Amino acid sequence: MTKVKSPVQTPEMAKICSLAIASLVLGVLGFCTFGLSGIAGFILGIIALSLIKKSAGRLTGQPLAITGIIISMASIIILPIFIFMSVFLPALIGSRQKVRTVISMSNAKQLCVAMHLYCDNNDGRLPPVDRWTHLILPYIGNNRAILAVSPGRNDKRPWAMNVQLEGRKINEISNPQRTVLIFESTFPNPLAGGPEMLPGKPNARGYLIGFVDGHIESVRPEHLHNLIWIPARRTLSPPDIWKRNSRPPLKIHPLSIESPSPFL
Image (tube, rainbow, N blue to C red; front, side, top):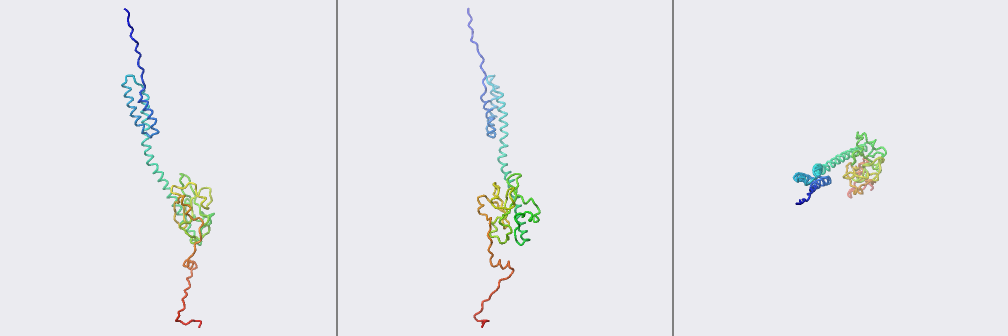
């Protein structure tokens, strides 16, 4: 009697768990999505480990699942950091820029006041442009006011004087509220000049300009054409002329018809 041989049963090959691969891929993508896909990768990694343990060797990929869980957790940690930076970093940068602008405007105000004090002691005339910073220094007492704080961290911008105002009498300048007295410039420009010396990159609110009447403004680049760089001489009215000459006007009384003429 012949024996019938039973067919040889080959062991089933183990498959890699697809959820473990998905967990790893989503964990890597979490660094591009700021942790959003990392959340799904972490969940899939936990499920993949559970399925691999219950498969009795039919599923593999435990190292992939563990790696996916770790990478997903790392990408999830980036999410709150990104939210914090996106919310608070612009506000922090904006506040620092506002502080720089306030300091620069304060410096410009000191220079304008010093200019007026110099004029009061020098027949009302503005200082020479080649040494105006040295001449007004006794009126400010702080040479740091000569520099304006620019948008850069350590970048300083010197103040320059409008070259067209050299030796001009400040009270005879027409439209002092729109006539440029000082403006922020760049190194190594001279101490005086015109609009060609303005920096190529303005501050967040525009160029800082000090005017003849003493006020300070941040002027946007599109509004520079409204500024006066070459002022006209102010036409003095009769009361100004009398005040300047310190002589009262002559009072001429017309002759009365009833009074006799002195020439008769």
